[in-house]
Amino acid sequence: MNNQDVDNISKNPLTATVEDYLEAIYNLAREKRAVRVRDIAKRLDVKMPTVRGKLA
Image (cartoon, rainbow, N blue to C red; front, top):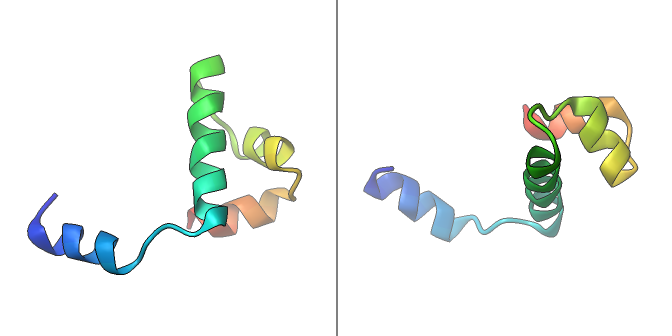
């Protein structure tokens, strides 16, 4: 990570939605080896295309 990355992070704090996705991914990864889009969608009660859009 370089200085520009750090500057971008501090200027663009995580939204609550992004935090939810990161938390879901983290928890799913701890529960099993692979984290699939369908797992995230089920955990967050959203549709798979919504997850794909957030991860893009």
